[in-house]
Image (cartoon, rainbow, N blue to C red):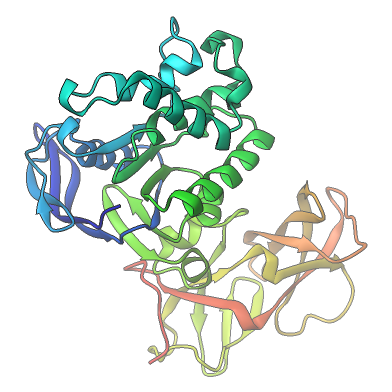
Length: 369
C-alpha cells in the first residue's frame, strides 16, 4: 500500500494542455475515484501514475519518494485497462501467472509457488474452474476477472483501474462493482479508479474527485459532493437524472425561478437584491402530481413531455410555462400511485429544504455566511 501525492503535475502535447497544474493526495489504502466526462484527462493522469507517460512538469510521490522519473516496472503498480488485454494464446492460468514469470530471475518465485498464488487469486475471484480455458472461451465478466487477477497476483502497492467495467452489460457491471468493493476490503491496496459513470463513482469511492477539462472541480466523499456540489458543473454532472438548473432572482423572502415561486431557505446566502442566481433542484425533490390545487409557493403547472420508469421511481419531464409564455423544462418524480401520460396537465411541487444556489457568472456555489 502507498500514499500517493501528485504535486503540480502538468501534461501538454505540443501547444495543447491536457492537464493544467494539478495537485492531489490519495491516502494509504483508499479507494479513490476520478470521475468526469470523456476527454477531461482522467486516463492521461492514470498513465502518468503508471509511468507509461512522462509529465511536462511537476512530480509524483509514493510514500514521500519521488517516482516521477522511474520506469513502470520500478513503481510496483498494477494497471487494468478498459479492454481486457489478455494474451489470446494463453490459458487463464498462464495469463494470471505471467506477471510472476517475467520478473528478474533473482526475484522469481519457484514454479510450485507461482501455481499456489494462481490458485489463491483464482479462488477468491471465482475462476478456479476456468484455469485451463483460453480467453475466447470466457464471457465478458470472466475475462474482466482474469484481467483483475493478473494485476492483483503481483500484490502491487498501487492498483490503477481505467474504466474496467465499461464493456460489460448493466447487470454484470453491478455485480462486478460489488466484487471490486469486496476485493478492496480484503486486500486494502491503494486503488485509483477512473470512470465517466457517476453511478460507479458514487457507489465505489471512499472519496472522489470530479474533473472537467483537466481541472479538479471538487474532492470529497460521494454523499457530500452529491448533497453540496461546489459548482454548476458538479451539480449537473453528479446524479441521474441531472439536477434541474433554473435562472432565478432572490428577493427578501422568496426566489423567483421562472414560473416557480419558492420560499427562500433560512440559510440562504446574503446577496444583492434582485441579483440573478442559478437555482439547483434535484429531481427527487420535485414531486409531480395531478394538476389541482392553487398556485402557492413551490407549485408550478405544466404539461408532461416525457416519462421514464426506473424501477420503483417514475421520472417525469414537465414543461412549465410562466406568465411570459416562456417554457421551462424540469424533471421530477411522480407521486406514489400517480402515472401520468405524455401531454397530461400536472402540478410540480418543490420540497423547499433542498434548494441549491449558484452564482450565475462564476458557476460557484453560494453558501450561507
